[in-house]
Length: 52
Image (tube, rainbow, N blue to C red; front, side):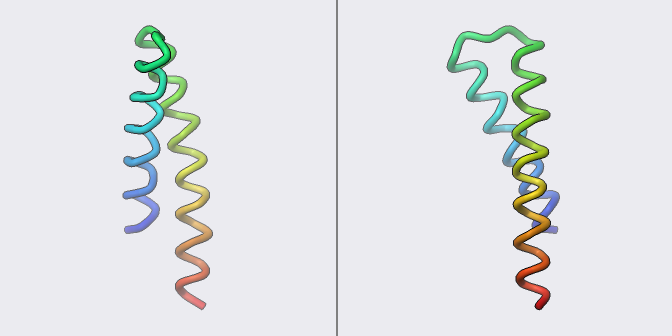
């Protein structure tokens, strides 16, 4: 559950970040994908730490 929330939060933050920098729709999509991956990996680590 943490991973899914992190993916959604990362995608939203990435799209917002690209929009703030003046990017077009493809820039927003790329930023959203990259931030979602990064936040997803952080979510995986948090989940593993909490399980131990």
